[in-house]
Image (cartoon, rainbow, N blue to C red; front, side, top):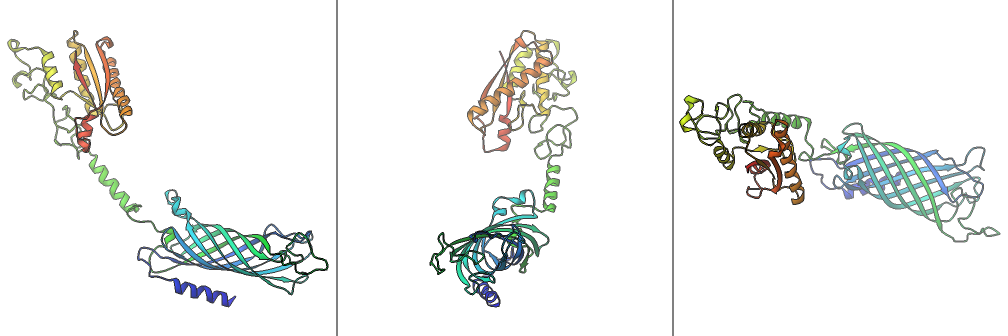
Length: 431
């Protein structure tokens, strides 16, 4: 056993390279538990499903967070099922070199728990079996090569220790005898007994619990390291959430968050556009929320209404307001429910149509250029229908209204978030 341990330590020293500072790479693994010789066994010989009799020690090195390799020494024994099988004891020792894959990282286990991990391992090596009395061939230990593979689950106890559970399957190559040592590993037994020089395989598995001890000067081992740029700390997340909350504040209550609001001190009740700027639809200097005639210019002394001798056609001024982009209903990305701040535009149109019963109106829906053309056409129609329903529910005769989706508005700069917001809208067209 000592010489195998020396080999592992020398191998680790020869392969060691300078680790990067962000995480540790080396670990020592200690495991113990059960084994099960599956076959071949001499007819009539049985082994327990869980035979307590296996221990192993290993040294692992991770090249990066995802792959590495390890050297492993194992020892144990196979025994019979008490009272149901003839007695036998078989001792074994193995030495293997295996590649390791961090399946937990590859499958993003950290998305639901940073305490759980999963390693896969596969490799090969050699071993020795000693068949003890009363085995027929107890004086003839044999040597074989071994192929091994398995899965190791990890539970992080601390930055330096992890609890492990492993299940491994082992295949012995060039095995001359059965795993109990009382039969040749061949279908036909020579009589008198003599080595038939048949070298078949033997299969056995192990199930163990153990501990991983992590070595190095860094805070974390590769098993539990998460890059800062990919996974923020709780403090960083808290700071980011605070910044978002600050950005979403609406100090003047006009429905436009401060980070988008070009007029952060809008008076209470003012009607604004998507940039938070107070609207003056008829351009007479009296903002809409104070203007008694928002679509007819007039002096402020008359609350924005023209004198009786100056009264002009209200329809013409609404057309102008529409053409100048003052009367629009806006929507959030991929939504067909109007944004709260822009519903007032629909109210103005509703009031206008009630005062002018001879006017008919078409509602035109638009979308930005993100997404497929077919999807955006359907979305624009849903937006137009939503405003149509809003006007009908306000008391406008449905026979005076129509709606249509026009798909993508390609007149805006699709690389600009502000421009894309202006494209997510409905217009009104007087017929």
